[in-house]
Length: 86
Image 1: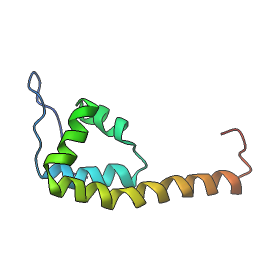
Image 2 (image 1 turned 120 degrees about the vertical axis):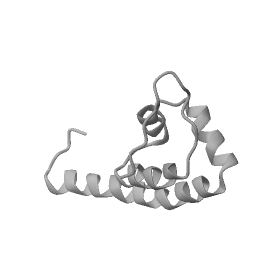
Image 3 (image 1 turned 180 degrees about the horizontal axis):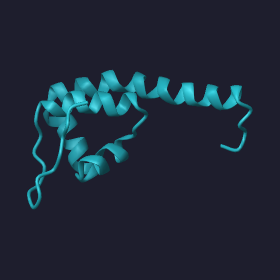
């Protein structure tokens, strides 16, 4: 996964490296609010990046089915293990 970190005292600026990181985080089941928290950005900033940066929006669209599959597999694992507490 691409290492995206906020520099202390400065707001995080968008870079193309966020696209790969976004796909990786979504493939691991992360939701938008979780990703924003991970990057220490406001959720509004996340949505602004989607509007402003076509490649980021495309990465988001790639990540959506990956995130869905991650959660579907988790649900199937829980059912297979008889875990009905979730």
